[in-house]
Length: 314
Image (tube, rainbow, N blue to C red):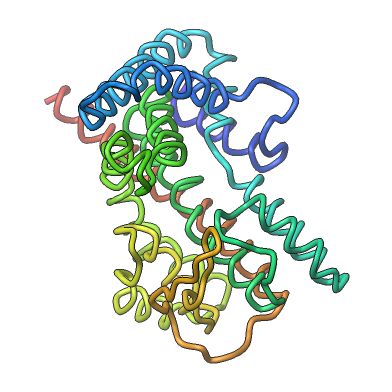
């Protein structure tokens, strides 16, 4: 079956169904593999070295298994479909939006706690909206555009390797005493893997999406170039800056993690207060960005295939 056609089917399945909650998800299996290897390796003295060993094992196993599974077309399409998170991310944002429309702040805090690592117990309405939008904006990269890009480059095996990288970072890539050495390579590899996708998303795809949605795409570009480095992570602020500029809101500021308050650098200009409808606008940006990414990557793939065919023929 045509390579692009399989990607389109997987993309459409994600838009219709979202994450498969009742069927084993490959990321859960990868997570169990990471946990198993962590228990075996974390107590060795050279934690950074053995953390690197864990990365090599997880990525190698993931690639090899997917390389063989892709030979069965229905399994290949299913696994491709699970790699995308567009519908799931939109659903989680909509849950918070609907609860906020009911003015149930306590329930909204609880719902948000499933999405973010920050403390949510004392967040006010504006903080809940801001946190939800930051999550949707940041995850537009690692939940949608990055796996899509890797899928176009290397098919199912490389795309699933990216998901494994992302999962290792979320499980091991902390800077606390337990993981600062053991999770060093997990965090670094995730930074490297997201370097190009983050910049493509924030500097190109989101502004184009905002143009079609009639949001402030010019300010999206401007804030992206100005504030894209205003984050402790080298990649997180790129998509956040583009969204903040388009919608005239400001991300960052006071945020609490595990009972300790931090003053994060601000992203964007506070042209207005946060409103519930900003979440819906953010979700629209997510959907249109994913479609534009699919279109642009498809065009580049077709161009490369044409040039390769022309070179072989000549």
